[in-house]
Image (cartoon, rainbow, N blue to C red; front, side, top):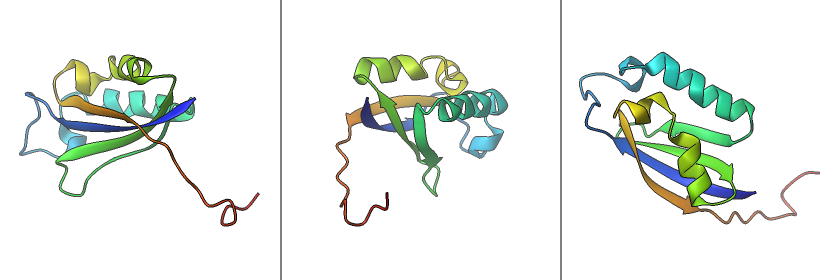
Length: 100
């Protein structure tokens, strides 16, 4: 499994006068995201403070599998968000700082 850093930006149906929690199909999007988290396919996600972008850390085989994973996200299907970037992320941790 590889780790990917995803960047989502506002789609054509994003309403700037509303928060992410008040966008079209927000509840369905939240259930979708929670399911990915429980399946360990997503390890972190959230909007930047100004809500201009959403950043997600996800696990998968390759970019294609990651894009496929999010194709049924209600925010993607309804044009609230667009998945702009999928970048493979090679994490480097100092083993001396990580407790076993």
